[in-house]
Amino acid sequence: MKMKLIEIKEYTGVIILESGLHIGAGSDEIKIGGIDSPVVKNPVTGRPYIPGSSLKGKIRTLLEWNEGNVDEKGLPFSTDKSENLIARIFGNGKIKEDYNGGPTRVSFNDCELLEESARELAEAGGFTEEKTEISMNRRTGTARNGGLRNIERVPAGARFDFCVTFKIFDMDDGGKVDRAAYELLKRGFKLLELDSLGGSGSRGYGRIRFDNTSDKSVWPESGNAPA
Image (cartoon, rainbow, N blue to C red; front, side):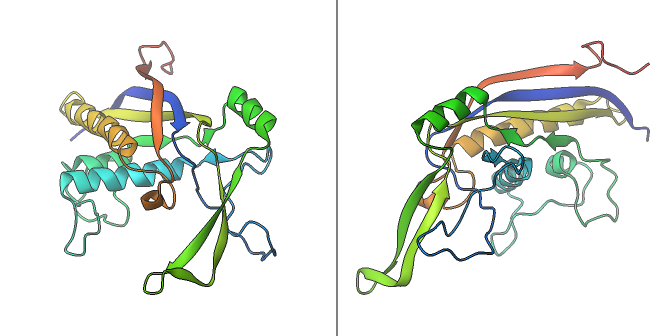
């Protein structure tokens, strides 16, 4: 069986936060009265961003649930069969034996804060907000000891760019299966709009919307094919 790269698709647009977003950066410091759980930030600009790995991981999980690739514990997985579209899209991980579906098709860029949105947030007081939460004792209806925590979030209304590229291979099928995989990937973006991104989704965090999306071929139709 031959494998030839015949096209690269590009899916781009804007991510609009419908509610506060928390994608944690971790913290090794304990600050009295400070932020207990900061968000991930660009180390150069200090601005929050959305890691491509966060988008990739959540979309993959939603598609695996949607396709029924879930084990007896409710955990998602991708099979080692070459015809499995999810494995083609995202890669096959540790399962290598008897897999001939080829390389990972999708590549997610990190999503940077749009300049206009950054200016708006700066004028409003900063790139992030602090949300205080309390862990409750459900039997007594009172706060647990040490249950008070301060969570950093990117506020609702913030906007980020996103860009995903997808490789189409001809595996003796003219790229038919990979094109089907690409359409499945786009379904994952819709599923994400109906779910949440980042932490604390069940408490209303991380509701997002994709806007101004563009779906086009950037190679070779754009004239960027290598000689």
